[in-house]
Image (cartoon, rainbow, N blue to C red; front, side):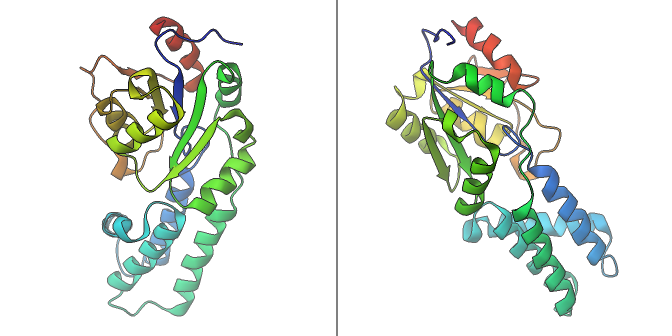
Length: 236
C-alpha cells in the first residue's frame, strides 16, 4: 500500500479521456456526419455548425452521446434547409447507437496507478455525461471496485467540487482532482481550494479548451497518469 501524503487524503478522477478513450469516437462520428452532408456544405463548415449546436443544446440535453446525436440531427436540418432525408436521419441515429455500443479501452497506466492508490487515498470518480452511458463504461472498464465513490454530474463547477470533496473527503483543501480538461477538471477544482492535475489527452473537445492556470501553486501537469505517484510523493 502506498504511504498517504500528509497533505492530501482524497483524489478525484475524471473518466472520459482520463481513464479511458472517449473523444476519438466523437471525432470519427463527426467525420462520418460531415460525409453524409458533403453535398450541402464543406466538412469544416459542418463541424463548426455542429459545435455551435452542441454548445447551444447543453442546457437542454447535457453532455454525452444522446445530446451529440440530437445536435447532429438539428445541424442536418439546418444545413439542408429542412430537406434532410429520412435515410440520413436514420444513419445519424445508427451512428449514435454505435457510439453507445463501442467497447471501453482503458488508457495506459490507469489500472496500476489506481491499484497503488486504493486503500491509501479515498478515490472518487467524478464524471459528467449521460447516466446510463457513464455507468456502462465504468462497468466495462473493470475499474469500479477501485473507487470509494462515484459521482455522475450534469456539469463540473466550483460548487461541484466543494460538495463532493466535503461529502466524501476532508474538504477541498485536502483533495486533488485529476483530469484531461482544464475547463472542467482543473480550473474549477483549484478555485474550490483543491489541487488540480492536468493530464492532457491527444484529442480534446473544443468546448473544454481553457488557459492553463500556470501561476497557481496547486496546478500541476503530467505527461501521463503513471506520473501521479511521483507527484504525490513530491507534494509530501
